[in-house]
Image 1 (spheres, rainbow, N blue to C red):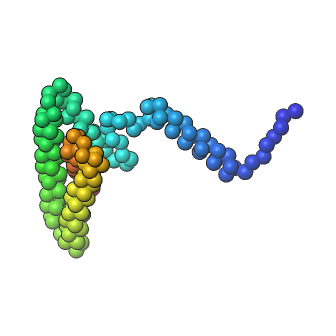
Image 2: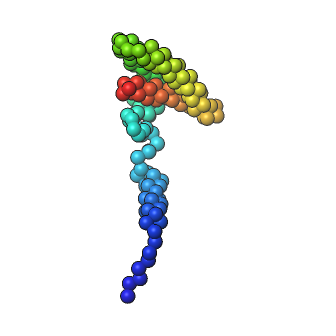
Image 3: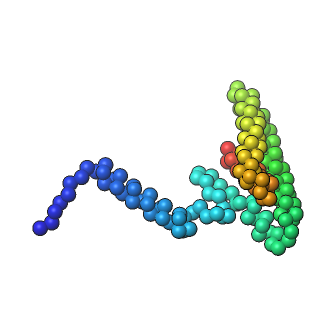
Amino acid sequence: MAIRLSFPRALWLLVGSATAAAFIAVAAIAGAGPALAGGPIVTAPGPVIPDPLTECQNAIGDKPRIALARCLSDAQNVADKQMRQVYADMVKDLRGINASGTSKAVATLKEAQKAFVKFRETECLRVGAAAMGGSGAGDMQTACMIKLTRWRTADLTQS
């Protein structure tokens, strides 16, 4: 004789959700999850932004640390140039629209860009400081700048 248990549907959903969360946690701990150290940073929704520190470490191979700093500096210059170009194009495109809301759209874009730059500077200072004076603090800070700059460029491009 089978025993039939009767539980409310909400309880079954809760149990199912908890089970799914447990499987996801186990996969992440085992290294099978999507967020692996040194791999691409996956944001949802949005673009996949590669880790600049890993990119440069792979690019320089066995060269001295100064090569890593140079690689990161070059990557930061490229990222900044791309962001400035996308931002300038966006301002130009907005100004080309003859509408009553154009000036407000341009002004808020400028405010948002200033706020982003301030956030990026502060956040990346925090990332560098979190290394507690370690030898990689500057590299981590620069990689943070690159990452956030690339993110902003992609965000502006999609807007």
